[in-house]
Image (cartoon, rainbow, N blue to C red; front, side, top):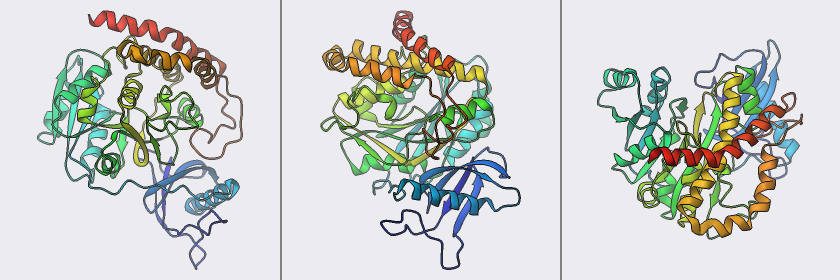
Length: 422
C-alpha cells in the first residue's frame, strides 16, 4: 500500500484527469509506503491518491522493474478518471474550528499494537484533545505498564473489568468531559489530520450527531488481507455524504437500517450529549460478547432515529492493519453476519416503536442481506474501494455461508449477552 500526494490542478470539465505541469511531469508532493507498509518496489501496487493532501481515489496497478512508481501511479490515476468520464470527487471538511475532543481507544492485551496507534494519535494537528485508553478485562498488566512508562501524563489509563467492546466504549464516554468523543481501534494508524477532519463538522452543523471517516489498509501482505480489501474492506468511498433522518437518501430504501453503509467503529465520533441521550452503546453488543459485533451499527441507528444527522467524510483517514490469516477472515465473516442481526435485535428491544418501520422494509431487507452475503465471482476491478482488485479474487462460497450462519445466530447471541449481563 502506497500513499501518493499530488499538486495538480483538475483538468477542464470534460477531461476529468489532472494535467501534468508545463514540463510534462506531474508535481508529486510525496510518495511513501502506508504506515507500517513495506518499501515500494516493482510489482503490484495499491495506492491512495491525494490531491494536495485530500484523499480522492485508490489506484491498483503494476510497476514494471526499473520504472518510476510515481509516474506509473499518476498515469494509472489519469486513465482511471478518464475511463469513468468524471472528475476526481470534490472532498473537504466543513470549515470550522474543531471542538474540544476526547479520543477513546478500547484495547485488550495488545500492547504491542497499541503503542503504534497512540504515537499516531499524539501527533494529531487537532488544537484541543486528549487520549483515553480503556483496558478491557485485562489478564496482564502490559497495557497499564505501557501507558504509565511510555505515555505518562499524555494518555489517560482507565480500567474496565467487564468484557465487551460496547462496555469499554461506554466507560470511555463516562470519563469524557468534552463536547465530542471520538473512537478508534488499537490496530490503526491515524493520519495527522484525522481528528480535525472528523470533528470539524460538529462545529459547522449543530444538527450533526455523528461523523465517520475513511478506513484504508496499512498493508496487503497476505491472501486474507488482499481478499478482504478486494471486496471493499472497511472503506466507504471518497465522496462526502450526509444522512439526514428528515430527508432519507433515495438510493437507500432501507434507511436507516443499513447502518453498515454509514461507517465503522474504527473511525467514528459523536456529539457527547447526543450519544449519552440515546443511552450510549448497547453493552450486549460488540466484540467480546456473544453477539460478536454490531455495537457501532447500533449507535449509528440510534443517533439517526433520535433526529440527528450523520456525516461521512473521507478527509478523516485512518490506516487499518487487517487481520492476516484465513481463520481470521473466517471469524470476521461470521462475526460480521452476527453483528448485523444482533444490532437490529438490539434496536428493536431498546426502541420497539421502530418495529413497524422495520417490518415495512423487511422484504427489501432480506433481499439486501442475500445480496451482501452472496458468492461474488470474478469481476473487472476499477481501483476504488469495493471493486478494486476483484479480478482474480472471487469471494469464496464458504465465507458467504459463514456470513449467513452468523446472521441466523445474531439474535440468539444478543439474547445470550443480555441474559448474561443480568
